[in-house]
Image (cartoon, rainbow, N blue to C red; front, side, top):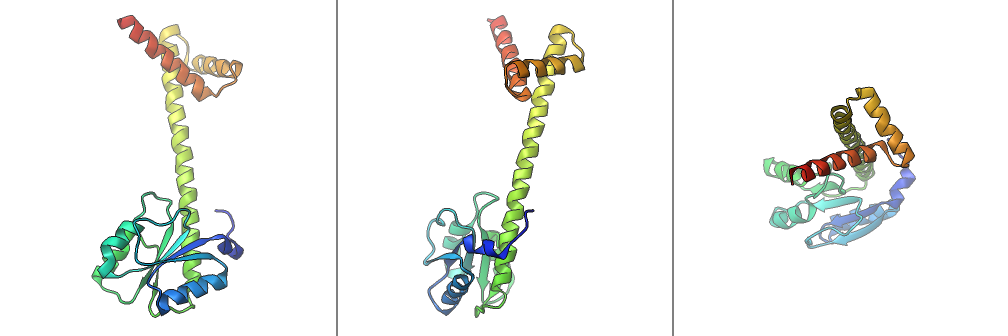
Length: 201
C-alpha cells in the first residue's frame, strides 16, 4: 500500500449522518480542525452524495430502515462507515454488522479517538481498493490465459502445430497487426466459430 500521510486526510469528503445536536456538531468541529470537507445530512436520504470517502453515521433504531437503505454499500469499494453509538447490545452489534461499519465511536462524542477512527477507516478503504484492483488484474490475466489456450487448441487441431509453435504463430500475428496476444487469440476464436457456423448452414 502507498505510504499513508496525515495531510491526505485534508482531501477527504466526510459526510456526517446525524442530527444537528451536540454530538453531530462535535464531529463536524473535529473534522473541520483536521481540514476535511464535510457535510451534515439529517434525516437520512435515499442515498449518499457522490464521491464520499468517509461517513460518520449515528445509528438510531427508530431510523434503522432509512439508515440501512442509505448506508448499505452497493459495491466493495464504497465509503468507509464509522458508526456513532450510545450503547452496546446484541441488536446494536447486528445493526453495525448489517451496514458494514468499519469503526465505531461512542457517545457522548469526544475529539479524542476520532482522528484514530478516521485514519483506520481511510487506510482500510485504501487497502480494500488496492485489493480489488489486484483481483481485477489477476482475473483479467487469467481470462487472457484462457483465451490464448483456446486459440492454441484451435491452431493445434486445424494445422497440426505443436503448442509452442501455435503460441509463436499467435504472437507473430499479434506483432504484425500491432495488437495484443489476447486480442489476436480472440480473433482466432471468433474466426473459428464463424467458420463452424457457416459450415453448418
